Image (cartoon, rainbow, N blue to C red):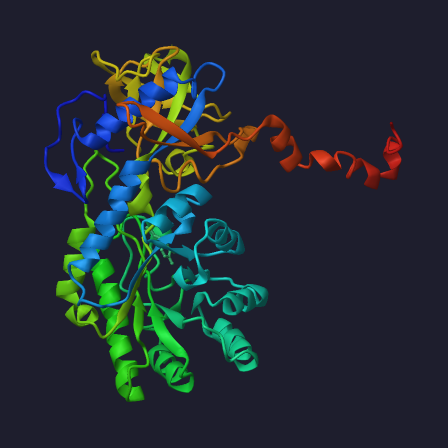
Length: 479
Ligand SMILES: Cc1ncc(COP(=O)(O)O)c(C=O)c1O
């Protein structure tokens, strides 16, 4: 595993600016984080009685949204319709969706739950795209009734949409088909969706598939969009761009065969990778947009509307998990900080540390960045298995009892994706921003799960359900 250090006071990486964010340890972003950690401790959001909390940097999220818009504005012909739809799966929290909606970002949803979150955030159907690979007839019916854009995943789903369009031809839903350009995978197999055997979309290079797709469009004048998403973290930008180029070439072929601009919008998915190794935002939206514009210039000349579906790159670097060090111990000569952040808030890192290393920053009991010599140590979580480690053999200032360990870059696909091991309760999520007087103000994004809620969610209301099924126990009537 790559060794990452973030002691909170190391030398700056650089003073450049990327993705709209200043970079380096003394960057505005790092300064905001330090102030937020300090304020969270001072204001009692985290402490002995509440040893785990998650924080979201509102300013950072807004800056990333602006960088995304600017990057594509710079390469698209004036007047091109562009919808940047946030992949809700990355951070499925209603206040986050509302914040992004206010920043002119739409939503990409992939389940009834995600659609409900987008609607609860006030995102209108016209700014929502439904993409999941296993939509039921009821989900499709609802999406078409609402006028939400739908990308069909496969021929069987398209047949279901045929039936719905036949019975309700007046739907306002823009409709498309997802294709898998089969351009290959990135460094994380589980997140590579353009492999030869990926489960997503119509595999374009399979025998007869391309002709089938073209025919499907020619037979359905209402199919006006084409969708592709080649993968997420670990994908080289060039490979993502090649996937988009394949979809563009197909759209051109369909339109030529149709003799009209039938495909009017390309949905190019998300997938911009995130740098988990430092505060620097790289690669940037600007780099990717420029690469796309040079690889697929026709896509940006105003003939096609665009939909993007970025998730991780909008949120990851703006989230922090802050966990109190309950105990500091040592075993076999290894220093170990036992904290309250483990598999329940960082499942990917704990189960696949090679693919998902996280930076961990050390703060003292008052929430100040820790100084001192770097010591090789493990940062452990609270779960009952040996692999429950946020970081293994990491060099950083020694974490001591009562200190805080901050897992950085956890704003997407981490604390919003709670894993219920050991019945560990979901921590609160607080957004932070300036209070206007030089301090930090917090707002609750999600309250901490209470123990009563946890019991209820775990069948608490059905305590007798199983014993009541077994007549041999004789205990079913116990009062
Ligand atoms: C169809 C689709 N669009 C967008 C995304 C978001 O990807 P990322 O968070 O890497 O930008 C995903 C991620 O799984 C996806 O499956």
